[in-house]
Structure formats: C-alpha cells, structure tokens
Image (cartoon, rainbow, N blue to C red; front, top):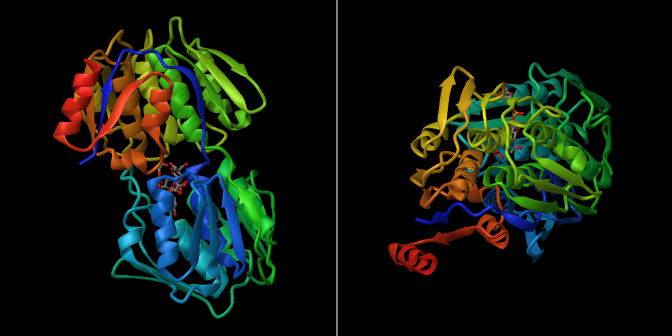
Length: 430
Ligand SMILES: CC(=O)N[C@H]1[C@@H](OP(=O)(O)OP(=O)(O)OC[C@H]2O[C@@H](n3ccc(=O)[nH]c3=O)[C@H](O)[C@@H]2O)O[C@H](CO)[C@@H](O)[C@@H]1O
Ligand SMILES: C=C(OP(=O)(O)O)C(=O)O
C-alpha cells in the first residue's frame, strides 16, 4: 500500500501552482453528458475522484478522451445505459450528480447511493425532494436511487439546509425542464457558480448562481462548448495552512483571491503577512503565529473542507483557539493522531479546544479522510523527525501530485509503495 514518508522541520518556501477545483470539476464532468455534442473541459484536476467519475461516465456509454493531462473531451451522444454501476459510485460522493444530469437529459436515472468521505451522516433527502418537485417519481431499492418522469416541469424548491450537492443536482435536473424552476436557500460556493456558468455555456438559462435564489428557465437542448474550470479554493487553502504551520513563505499561484477571503481573514488574525496580486497570494509566516477561533459555515463562511488544515496550524500557534464544525458531525477524526504527535486538543461536541504547542514529534499516522489526511501531511511537515502516513488514497482523491508540489517547496516527502522504497528514501535523506 502506498504511503507518504515525510521528514519534517523544513519551512516551505517558493511557488506553487493550484489546479482546477475538484468539487467544480465533478459537477461539470457530470453535466457534460447532458448534450449529444462534444464538450471540451480544461483545467480538470487529475485526481482519483475525477478519474473515477470519468470511468462511470464511460461505463454508461459516453465517450471520454484525455486530450492531455488536464483537458478532457466528453461526448454524451452515445449513452446507452441509465444505470450507474455501484462499483464506481461507492468510491465517490459526486456520483450523485449523474442522478440530476441523466434525469435532466433522459428523464430517468438509476444510481447507487453515493460514497465519499465518511465525515457525517450525509443524507440526500434535499436532492430527492427537489427531483420530486420537478415531477419525478423517486424510489430507493437495494441501495439504488431511481428517478423517473414522463415530463419534468419547473418547480419552486426551498432547501431546508444549505446544500452544495442538491443545489448543483437541481440546476442540472431542471435546466431542460418545462418552464421556470426557482431554487431558494441555495448554496453560494464558487463551484456552484462555476457549474452554472458551464451549463450556461452549453445553452442553459440559469440566473442568480452565487446568491441564495437561483432561477432556471428550461431550454429544449444543450450544445457543446469549451470551458475551463476555476482554481481549487481548498487546494490553495491547504498550501496556505502548510505555510503557516511550517513558518514558511509561499507564493500560491493561479488562484482567485476573492474565493479565499475567509481563509486569508483567519491567517491575518493569526498574524501571518499576506501579499495579494490578481491571481496569486503570498503567505509569509516566518515570525510568530498566533491563535484564533474558527467556525465552519457555508460560503462565504469558512469552508468545512479547510477545518482540519487550519486546526493543525492553530495547534502549532501561540495561545488557545477554538474550532467549531457546524456542517458535518464527524470531522475531527484526525485529532487523536495529532495528539499522538504532541498536540493538545480536546474535542467536546462540535468544538475542538486547542492549546498551541511549540513542536510536534513525528509519528506513524493514518489518513482518516481526504482533508484530515492532508492536515496530517501538514502536521508531519512541521514535526521533528520522520513520519509515515498510511491510507493516502484518501488524499489522492483531491490533491494532484501533492508530494511533487510539496517537494518543489522544499519539503522532504516521498510516496513509497514498499518496505524497500521506504528504506531507500530513509537512506537518501539520512
Ligand atoms: C463532492 C463535493 O462537492 N463535496 C462537497 C459538498 O458535499 P455535499 O454536497 O455532500 O455537502 P452538502 O453541502 O450537501 O451538505 C451540507 C449539509 O447539508 C446536509 N444535507 C445535505 C444534503 C441533503 O439532502 N440533506 C442534508 O441534510 C449535510 O448532511 C450537511 O450537514 O459540500 C460540502 C460542504 O461544503 C463539502 O464538504 C464537500 O467537499
Ligand atoms: C469531503 C470532501 O469530498 P466528498 O464530498 O467528495 O467526500 C472534500 O472534498 O473535502
């Protein structure tokens, strides 16, 4: 099994380029099947989740072609099957987007209940409520969700919780429905806007994405287009926290600084220096880093997908901090691992109480999920000694060439796949 080996204690320095947003890509790749024409999508992050979704898309008969590493062409004209295999679905959360995309295009879809990171109970009742409001009959049988309609008709849908997944799914399901659909209490994340922009580039008529009321006027058909995915807010934020935790100085390139405001606000409160350009941010954390309090919230609040990473930086900051998780109930699984490295963190309910310590010591670690895994890599980069991190397939779900990008910033890190490779790396780094 692959693992990361990290020799910590090196402040990260240099420049890193951020890839396309995983959570936008997953919506966009699924939406691309909604036309029979060819769609070219650029800046697709080459991560495990996008690869699995593309396999699922091929599995139903669509044509998928990698033009080069981060550009993909999809043609949904040859789709022959409206059943998405469990084999793909259990591995990723965003498989549920094929429900909305197939239902919107063919008025029928059958998709196994989604997987994804085990960070909470993650129901999909709001997705299903939305499909029903458009006139679909929805059934769940043996773990497979089936949605079918004679005709989809626009409806008025009020989401009881702010949900990224249901907002994107309903934009897809309704964009070829008869008449107008109104989504109220919609999520406002940058990737919602990106998926809406993509659907509009294919000929949809979606207005208001990025606000909490989205209006979708149904169109008869969608057409092909070329589209480039926005930069990944969470990948960028992860490197920003790695700079803070290792007391480094990093320029994070190819980002949209506006999408990072909740993260930069916290780094400023922690005493880091920030310099910003049109599409880059420099994080300078060479002096003392201080404490702050964080509460995760839907956008424009602080993202839950950044909660473990900032907790690591705060666990190495001077003073006491509180981190409150308000989106998912099971997102503190990394805390025991950090405490084994010398962190002082106590979790009570949905809040982690953190007493900053000066140093972590290295440990044998296991990634419990994607972002917690990335956070443990940051912890290892900041720790004295050599750490090993297992279960890195979680991390590979969302970070393209994580080890390569960190190495380019001076980190001593390798991905190894055997005891022999591990010993070889240890010998090399001394
Ligand atoms: C593939 C993808 O884009 N994943 C992201 C997406 O997940 P995901 O789309 O699963 O998250 P949601 O925004 O839907 O979930 C937000 C909250 O709503 C609840 N809920 C959601 C749907 C529903 O039908 N019923 C319900 O109660 C969830 O349990 C959670 O408490 O947004 C999350 C919140 O920003 C991120 O952490 C994930 O990285
Ligand atoms: C939780 C995440 O992904 P998913 O919703 O796909 O599990 C994430 O990207 O942090």
